[in-house]
Image 1: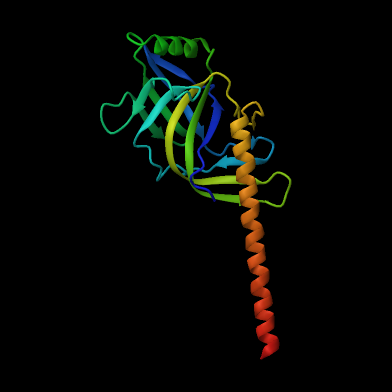
Image 2 (image 1 turned 120 degrees about the vertical axis):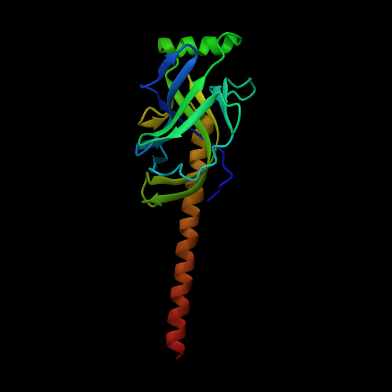
Length: 207
């Protein structure tokens, strides 16, 4: 498995909250939700996947545009965003500077109106489990995340509980790469098993 592959996933945020002036709360990741990734495989985030995840420095952006100044940041000190893990998933609570940042104000108002209705997060995987790899559409269960670098408010959530859109070409390309790598590892394991069987058979015949 390539632990260095940077991956993003998006969720429709039906439960977005603007709890006070400038504050936005919502889920960037949801547990036990089966999602079709680019038509290549299904993906499920297992409960407990964030237990040992590095969440020490996470930025909040819009549409993963990291070239722009972050709207909020979660870190050990002077944080403007908190991240909590509950029974549903990974929840963010961000305080936007709507008085001094015009973009933050525009984003806050768009979320409040419902124009921006999605959350997304960018991550690295520590541990995963593939099921039914030989089938046309296998399932990947994410058991442990290694690190979350960034969360985003997105205008077109590609991960509405069912599928990642083919319009998100980078995500789809990554999905294809991940599946090819997993199947290659499976083939290598089968090859090693056959070699071991032949070795045992040869040893028995010899003695």
